[in-house]
Amino acid sequence: MNKKLNILIGLFFCVNICIAQIKVWKNLKKNKTIETVQWEVNDIIYNVRKEIKDPFTKQAFAIVKGNASTQKIPLFYNGDKTWVLRYSSATIGKKTFVIESEIKELNNQKGNIEVAKNQKKNRHGGIVLSKEDTQHFYYEDGSHYFNLAFECDWLFALDYNQKEISKTEHLLSLIEKYGFNQIVMNVYSYDVKWPKDEKLKSYPEHEFGSREDIFPFLGTNSKPDFSSLNINFFKHFDKVISEMHNKEIVSHLMIYVWNKMVSWPDMETKADNMYYDYVVKRYQGFPNIIWDVSKEALHYTRATKEYISERIQRTRNLDSYNRLVSVHDYGFCRNHKDEVDFISTQDWKHTLYQNMLKARNDFPNKPIFNIEHGGYEDSPYVVFPGAYDNAETCLRRNYMCLFAGAYTTYYWQGTSWNAVIYNPFEQPEDFKKPHFEYFKHMKTLFEKVNFENFKPMPNYNNAGYNLTNEKDGIILVYNPKENNWAGGTSKALKEKFNYKNATKQWFNTITGEFTEEVKYIKKPLEFWDSRPWKGEADTILILSNLIVKE
Image 1 (tube, rainbow, N blue to C red):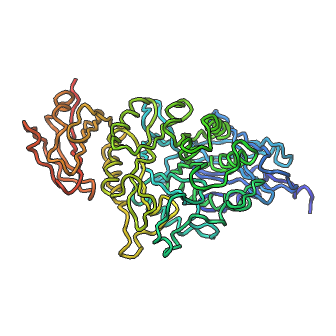
Image 2 (cartoon, helix red, strand yellow):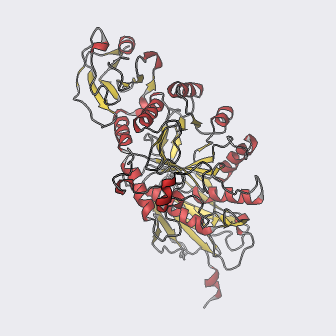
Image 3 (cartoon, rainbow, N blue to C red):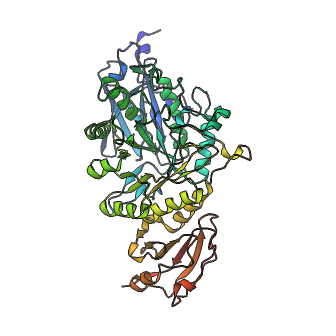
């Protein structure tokens, strides 16, 4: 055989392989164009003959040009003398790339890419910020991203070492079905420090803490070997992130976590940098990625604010896609607002609405995201009760965030931490089931009325909370179930709107029911206008067809 044929790494031929929604290209013939569509993830594989020492420290970048822009994308090592260029594109058109690398066999490899328009209805691209609307999230296609998150720290462990990820797919299907579009998750966690429910011992299939067979480095968490990374860990993690991308569920990826008993290498060591850089290199090509340096970044003693700042800059230097970056620590975000793309907070206080409103007012140019509000809905196991575990109370706290103009997160004790019940509705009858449906109803409402056009109006609050949408002529008033009346509209209508053609409708936050939309007739004393479902459910009054006064 011709010796030259053995060393032609960049020859183009599509093998038409898809691994968990990633389109794989290898053994590619010369001058063959890689054909893809917007936001489709492609792995372009390069094999080298020579064994490379310390491959995770070697540099290789693809310089991609097209659409009057240049992108410098890092390749990552994938074991067995292979390097991967993971590529996706938000723009359509023809592009070219050339690889620059200290590895001789990779250097100067070239290719062509042609990106067509994505026709799938559930493809909107990555999450970005808007210069025109600075306090909301948007997709790359310009549509609003109603950030409704779901915490699942141990998602990486659900099907580990299995060829198929059927349990993961089942849980993700439920998350998608009930309207959640983001998972707050760790790259890796080991175990929890707090007491565990004795009942878990009878259901070991739901316990994922202290797994010694899962570790992102060589060795185990108990006996770590920081000399290299565990490629198999990341190959499995690819499947998880890819399946999330397929369902357009965003990975809010916390690269570190300090309070889950992980044996991390010391800060800023070679091993620490190797791990951090590798995560950013390997996952930036997925449009459904949001970076978070660490869960509760400064709440524990492992990190300093200088270290977190350095990690943020490190992320931005490596990430050629400019994915959003934040830090799960309100103190850091507050004092380093110019370093983060949105403000992350963890607020359990009884005055949650007021605190979220203050955060929104303090940071008028950034979205506010309360990642933990102390509401952890109860499950068959007491995993972490937090401040609130009643399902309706947890739901109310989510609405308190939204009516203050902040985004929010749902926690169920059966999935958020080391106990993961991937199929809760198939469990025994005596197992407490989650109320995911409450959040499906929530999303339905806010997509119907365009959440992004609302602003909290606390000066119009009375017994509930007011959100006002001047653009579409809508007022929402949140009423706790203990509240008798439909207060919170008189002052707003008097000062802002002509309500001659206004209509009135009620929404039940528990069942998702809407009452019939009827003509609004203003009464002299609002508290005589009795609301439906009093004492049964929190409700939202919807006044529509309002016209802003000139």
